[in-house]
Length: 234
Image 1: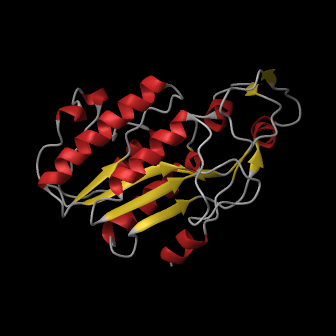
Image 2: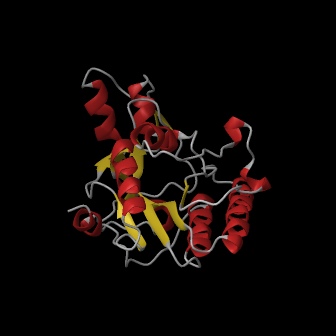
């Protein structure tokens, strides 16, 4: 679900399972009208990332559609991609046992999705740090790769950037070993970099960013402890 999105495209190309289906509004299939068929695994990637009440309401509609499907097929393994945004804004790396405390509506909507998924007997919740691609994704990293120069705030916000290919690989493993991956796992590098550092790495010292006003709801520090993930991947 959400297979035409950024992570979904990586997963589709990396995961040649014989029977699969993509549900996505981009493909003209509105998941809110129902998930059809009977599936061993549902990978739920879909999300409106805007920090608005409208986006939050849309995400909840999507969770309701999943819930209707699970009422009929409770033995399906659900893999749900959550976000670092469910955690509070803290300097120390967040583990799966850290208290949650989202600072924006996107984080709140992801946490609501976790509450839905935790009801199901077979579930995996993957809390993703900032997912990056090769300029084909969203977020500041991919924007810089495409020549973007805008930084909101002072550029000292710290983020943990994980490759989309790594995320796709983790999802594959979670689908293959559902009992092992039951529950919540952070997916990250475990290391943080400032937005300004990323800009300099991509552009070198000869370029300067354009600073814009800080956006409401931007956390200062998101780094996720990935100790559990590394143990599961061994």
